Image 1 (tube, rainbow, N blue to C red):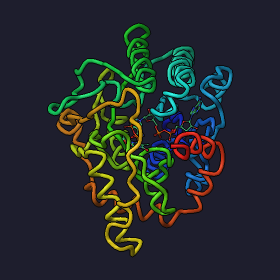
Image 2: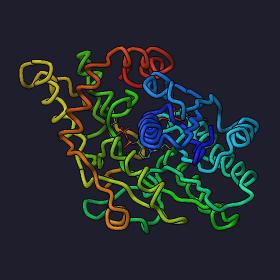
Image 3: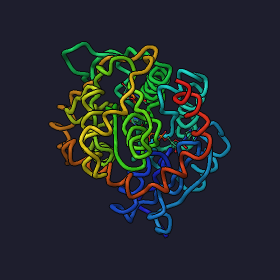
Length: 352
Ligand code: NAD
Ligand code: TYD
């Protein structure tokens, strides 16, 4: 079968990747979607059971550090576009093990760029779309927003590695004329989120009546976006974004951690039929994260005005859907917390 486009999506078995894969496979039957993923602790093919039999979907277990595999995949599938999500993504892990982030996020990205450079002799119709984070901009004070022109000032090894990969993508665009686009998104939440990040960790802990470890005074602010809205934004940018541009993605939805945790506790108590206040009693203030960024907030005017994207759900709707999903998918939670993650969990939280 001849496909209109052959799109390599890296990290498709991870949290955001599975939503992007599902959207593209279902919405664009004329595109072949090649999911390249190393299946680290964060990648799980259970996340994609509903698409794996589709004729326009292929899975390739491969590591972006393995150039031979990348070259074989570009050659075999005649890749003409890349949506690059594969990464080490958790700030706390980056504090424990910065080099893992250097390898995958920086060297892995450069490997992919080099492969595209080698295989894309004719650059027309090609696209290397790099998925990044607002954390590259560092921390905001009480006022103001990150825009596309905010200077990079990463504070964690994770954000430093993502900032570096963004710079390499830009540099390959300028130096080798590879058609590139970068988007920088705020914190995502939703189904299939690995339970080491704030929202799924706390949902899991509330379900098991375990302590909710709030870092520092809990007065840190994040700007939350439903993962399916991020996937829609990626679709929009992939099809309508301008080459060499960057786009910020966010929902104008800022929450202080402690306020978000209280809302989560109230919603979960209602859904679980608990007496009001039951889950809030689990809140435990713990030692702060080193280099903890105070506030993130995205100005998403550019993507909204130029490309017509805006979020489709309110935070309360998205959070309610997310909690319901976790309550209905406890097997998924048990499975993904059973392996290497369990070891990490012991190290991080149980000894506090
Ligand atoms: P995730 O950790 O859930 O998934 C990462 C995926 O990449 C996993 O499937 C993993 O197996 C795969 N992977 C890791 N190392 C690999 C390697 N060396 N080779 C091949 N595959 C590898 O991450 P996520 O939250 O889905 O984030 C996806 C992307 O979006 C990342 O680039 C991240 O920086 C970016 N991002 C995330 C958020 C967020 O809130 N989660 C926000 C903005 C941007
Ligand atoms: P996280 O989900 O790790 O995302 P990021 O660090 O990339 O923003 O954390 C979100 C916020 O929640 C951040 O301010 C750190 C805080 N946090 C806690 O207070 N306790 C926790 O157990 C975790 C994982 C995070």
